[in-house]
Image (cartoon, rainbow, N blue to C red; front, top):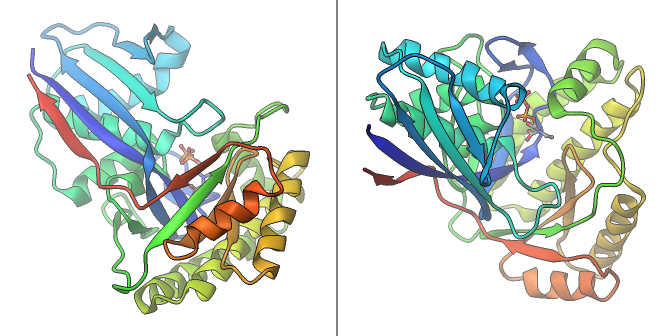
Length: 325
Ligand code: 2P0
């Protein structure tokens, strides 16, 4: 059995994807822009047996039951279809995150699975085809095929919805500081949360139209190396996404009290003259966007007022094969 191990890094959206135009193909309602991070990644090993049967999925050393394996199994069916094979898969995946506070992500998980499974099945996909395949597992995984800053073009069908790297100005060296906040409240999964937002939030049309325009504005700001513009666009997209969840029926939020407290500290750090901009995803953690020149001062400003663990991230690399045996 050919066993392939791939590594893919988590990405954080600067312009958010928060709603689908097509649930089955996972076509997003708008384009999005992200930063792949060096500190958070998944390593996934895949091999296909000769015989059909149930797939076996081990996550962080624990064998997963049929319910937990369902989404992986459905994804592997797409790979088997493309490769014209029928054997059951053996999948083992490990998340590498500093601690488990909501940083393991479906973006790195499905990007690593797409690369390892496609190679193990005998396919040799180019990065665009790989990005399209990863999209079928999880929307945000579309972007984790690539390193650094990335745009996911929403597209209009399976062939046109994929990601590609975005060129940044040579002087721009982004950093992202993750402020780790323990989740106390019950989760609404991203998949269910965005479906509810699309179906019921009167703010959703405004969010998605703005995100589409802001994706293009973000590409221009990255090319120009305009950190202030990058930061302002980043904050607006995150806060509009979270505003849209608050206006859904029934309403919900991923913010915890500590999320708002951390955001207030970031505002104070910025009022002190440092470039520091927040973004938040489908959980309570706050991430702070800044650059290499200012990151030490930003961290010092955060540490002066927060007890939370901080993780400083630089741009991370593209998904890659680690071993083939
Ligand atoms: C993003 N998030 O752009 C947004 C912002 C979280 C907040 O993509 O249903 O796990 O598998 O496509 O990609 C998280 O949602 O959802 C996400 P599916 P996914 O990064």
